[in-house]
Image (cartoon, rainbow, N blue to C red; front, top):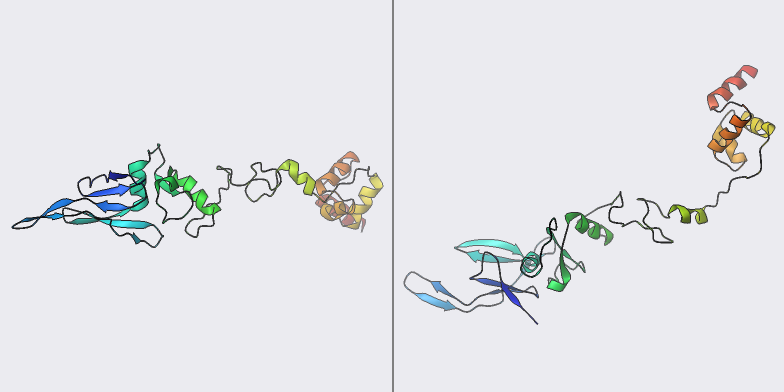
Length: 220
């Protein structure tokens, strides 16, 4: 059922309905020598560049452009503190029924626009403040640009480290072969360069590439 309420600031002239329709009231219009009864009617709406519907309201000879979705929200929806943006739930800016509108914060509105690929807004939510980034497997909140949470990422890891012990000779020969390059030498054992440095530390071998290069240069 359609319900109407007076528009704030234009109580004697216009009404807004819960369906997003603006209607002028029956009123008397004064002319220089007479008055005339003017019957109210539903006003036609226009669309701005952003796709929002608006209406021109007149008062004391001054015209004011008003967005329809804000008129509906201000008349029918109670506003919470810091919630100063009217959001369309179905993202259809021409659907201004009261059931499709809600008061939200500016940040929330930007996030919703980004999720639905709005061309007008871009919001990365890099700190995952609104839980927009979730693990592809379990759905738990994750960091921006990540695919999985830590526990699920293990399932997708194809790189498994060698669990057998390395001898001092193996570590030394590998580093000498690659001229002290820990990254290349570690790949030989299917491990990270930091893991190889731990083996060097265990056998009292140099843990920096510069030291290996210096020692190899002295031998040459």
